[in-house]
Length: 298
Image (cartoon, rainbow, N blue to C red; front, side, top):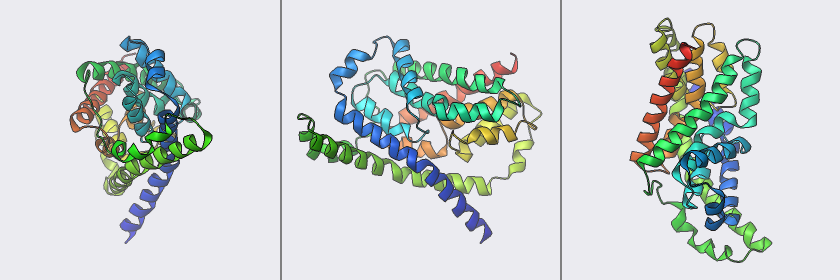
């Protein structure tokens, strides 16, 4: 009974911690759908993949969304013909470099190890840029999203041509509701798996390989993936691990968790094609592992 109680408490904590950000993400997605035309996006997004990804990263700075909340926004951007590199760079960067996360990371490490704050910021931007460009090269001109809400949304298309307060309001409510309920069911399932992992995963396993630099990085990457913490709070867990793990493995933990975990893997699989999601996850793991090893020798 104690195990069930703990699982329930953690599930509720993860789910309700993510819910406001998911609602915010759905609302922003709906506003983009209502007010931003394909022609406008074509004008403001650079054709150059690197410059386009930088625009996506800058967009991520100004939208305070967690890892699962950025998924409906990125999907809406792709539906608006935004290049894949822009949407992916935004999706990966926002949970790391938005002001709320930057402040929490700085507050957690500014006394103990301030370099970790700068590593998370700089490498978060760099990795988001690299993966965005690589994914664009792999999936060039391919439709990588799963069509779900678009079919149900046809009844609200008549609002889009004539912008009045009533039409715009109804359009935003319709799109926000559809995006929210498309994602929330995957969030619930992901939160359940994450809560099971947190309760059933023996914490002692983290200490088995902490003296080996390579294995400690791998262990904390897997830990970040399984535990599925929100990026606004993972810094304080990372700080608690400083006494047992190296700075480079803490950096790996702080980079991977916001970009991919169990929770948003399930949300991704509900919105993006399987080949796209698997490729994205593999790239995230490989590039974060390499960059974290580099940090070891700096």
